[in-house]
Amino acid sequence: MDRFPAHILLVEDSPMDVELTLDAFRQVRLQNEIQVANNGQEALDYLFGIGDCADRQKYPMPDLILLDLKMPKVDGYEVLRRIKNTPILKRIPVIILTSSKEEGDRALSYDIGANSYLVKPVSFEGFLGVVGHIADYWLTLNVGPPEGENGN
Amino acid sequence: MGILMGLSVIGLVAWRYWGLFSMNRKLRLSITERQRAEDAVQQELKVRIQAEEEISRLNRELEKRVIERTFQLEVANRELESFSYSVSHDLRAPLRAISGFAEIIARRHKSGLSEEGQHYFDNIVSASEQMGQLIDDLLRYSRLGRQTVTLKPVPLQEILAQAVESLTPRVTADKAVLSLAEDLPVVSGDRTLLSQIFINLLDNALAYHRKDTPPQVSLDWQSEGDHVVLRVTDKGIGIAPEYHQKIFDVFQRLHSQDEYPGTGIGLAIVKKAVDMLGGRVWVESKVGGGSTFYVEVST
Figure 1: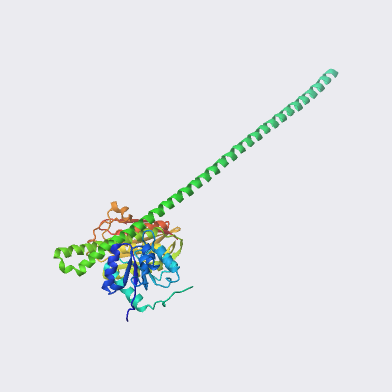
Figure 2: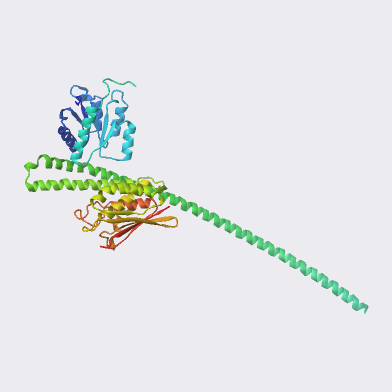
């Protein structure tokens, strides 16, 4: 099966986590499709096309968002809430990528409209497995929403 | 004679009058006494009412203080638990980086390292795995405390059937003999907590066996009034008496990783779960003579 050409937005505040995630994506050959937002505010600026991000050639609208929950100031919940409350963004699949297995975090994420919830394993080998599954499922098997805005 | 008669009549009349008079006085006196007694009773009643009011006032105050104190303790408890939760989570982030990069080096850049370098990287990888296990266990322990418990009748038969199933790989691998009493009772408890208790107790009983003999573990029970006491007995290495309390504390271990791997959370979870069910857990054991763990819960 072919992967559809996808743009991924990774929202992650820990630089080392970003490096590891990008490395893992390189291992499953997804290197050129990932944009990184280093915190919640950057993610919102990117998605709402604020400042430089207005240039959609350079900063294309993502087909998939990987979202960390625990971030200073604007946290993952806030980003998710804004995405799901905005007609032009709400259909973009959002995968929560977190180290928390807590019931409360899981419940709130799904309540706000997360499309998937993945727990980052401690071991890199485990993480490679998770990233491989993301590529296989979300970028290969899953059929995404149609282009264009939903006005509901 | 006439005079004598007259005198005696007068005497009789006078005596009669005296009698009436003194009776009257006695009556009057007794009325006063009665009045006094009634006053005394009234007084006593008043004192008692006041005392009762005082008692109920003190009771109300005490109740208020108990409620306040309970509330403070609950807050402190919640704070402690949310503390261990955040600590565990924040510890996990740098740990993922350590183990992640160490794994990458150990996988991809191994050829660039000397044998010593490779060995040290393998050490980093396995130490971070161990640390990951500790954090997971700490989270499990802190999650247990934040759970609300509703006591319901739980058939231990079902709980133990599940526990045994999850332990089957270990039982097969170690050629262990695991015997459970039949007709296990129904107790008042919570499924998750009871599972945690028996999985951990059985797991320990299987783990700490003498290296030359396969584990032999049994579980039986007896009824004591409205309680049941369950016993998990092994013929393992045993525990020295000075550790009989300490083993129930978090991360208390009596052996090195090489001897008996583990994180030291199992019995702390057992203790916490038993406490939450309002029960008791204790151990009888001596070094080399095996151990028996007792769990007392209500029916």
